[in-house]
Image 1 (tube, rainbow, N blue to C red):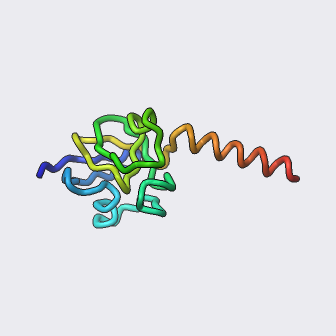
Image 2 (cartoon, rainbow, N blue to C red):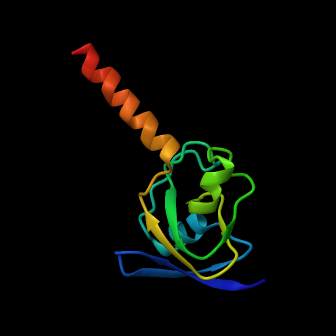
Length: 109
């Protein structure tokens, strides 16, 4: 078992996470307010942009293969190196959905 440092950009928060533990579970243990909902890699609420480092997240079904390189679903992601994450950053697929939903709502007005 290897421990890695996970730093959250812009918050001053830093935790140690084992390679056998998800980032979200460690956040919960440490009292860090990481957003989440489904905890099964589908809803993308716990998404964070990977600024630096690597994760293993084979069950992150809500991300495309390309998005898995740049984003971590903290409910599924386990560190594979020291990490810097920017929480609350969502992959393009979810941002596009949000814009489309907003456009549809505006059209209904």
